[in-house]
Image 1 (tube, rainbow, N blue to C red):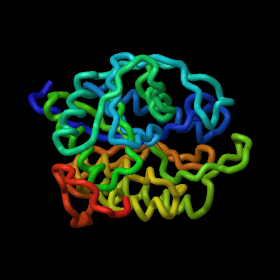
Image 2 (image 1 turned 180 degrees about the vertical axis):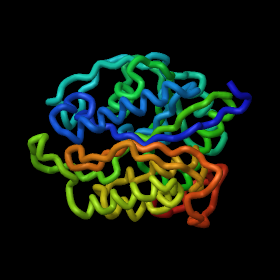
Image 3 (image 1 turned 135 degrees about the vertical axis):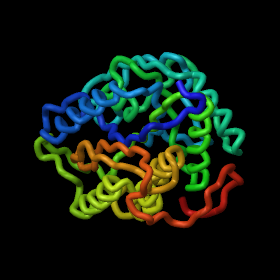
Image 4 (image 1 turned 90 degrees about the vertical axis):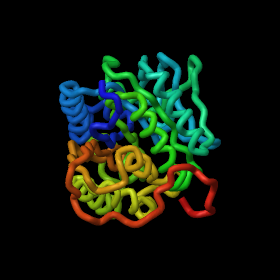
Length: 304
């Protein structure tokens, strides 16, 4: 364990239950399932001490919430796809790291609290991703919520709180965002074998984002998130903000090696498994100039 913790790489993961519960029903779902297995096998050969998951499937309204209960255990049923069945889970949480993130967030001016009681429901995205990536609880985890009203500055500060906690822990912690690319689901029932990206427009935007991320251009994706949200996602306050958080934790730049493990439709949405590893050279010098706040100074009345 090093004296200063770090993030060896970051991940973008999907979280819809088809990938876990019935991958055999669609070739694309099965490819995602196998890509999770490949990623897990590669991670098991590396020095990793834990995972932090920022999940768009766990929205919070008043501030930021952080799961710190040592061993969450329950049976989950997805509220949209309950027909697929139940998912029993039992996870191992790094409570100390969760507390440190909370302290760092408060020190930076954010409204933050830990959640620590038996029976608090873990969201679909984290349940699916952890059952696939961390089925034997090899790595302890921390799960943080996606505040639906946080603008870019606040989300960046929350990412820096996580980064500060990682550094002070002395551990190698992998930050993970659980999200989709395009997020328009089919509005009518389809047979699994007929699944496809909701529209050609969504597909084109997904391909552009994948092109950027494969080239390591994380900050460019972060800066394009508002436009991408308008073009390829259902209008809602949750936005495409996970990339703001991930860029804040890893570093707001384009100095990454990107790898696309898999990209497939899941009930109309764009599901991708992507890794971003810090590199000593930028993919391109295309960073945008924007404030890089260290503390949250209050709402700026801007569109998030």
